[in-house]
Image (tube, rainbow, N blue to C red; front, side, top):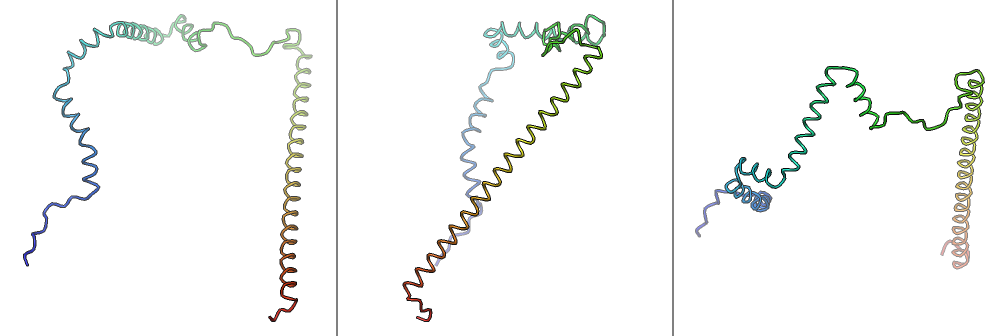
Length: 174
């Protein structure tokens, strides 16, 4: 009997599958590399179709470069411009709450602040106590449910034992 010579090339199945899967991507890459426009042609196409975007981008770039150059110099006008930028275009600082001018910076104002802080601490303690009471009530409810489940289980086991004793006539040796 004549045996066929062993194959010299061994190709694992996963390598063949990956090769077949990547074949279209490699073919497109070769096609694109041979047929794509040169950089000059591509730039001409972009300038033709998107000239307004290019001009806008160039002007924004020039403005940003000018701003950074003035910030490096460190004059007061550039610092003011930077502050304006950091404030999001708003030149004045707006308060989230109103300030009572009659109390601001006075002893009565300090006393009012202490009283306010004391009220806040009391309110915080009440919230904490309420939260703790709710947690304890929830734990009590969980314990009650557990007791009910254990009692129900005991009743079921007792009922099965009683039924077994009744059906077997109370004689264990059978």
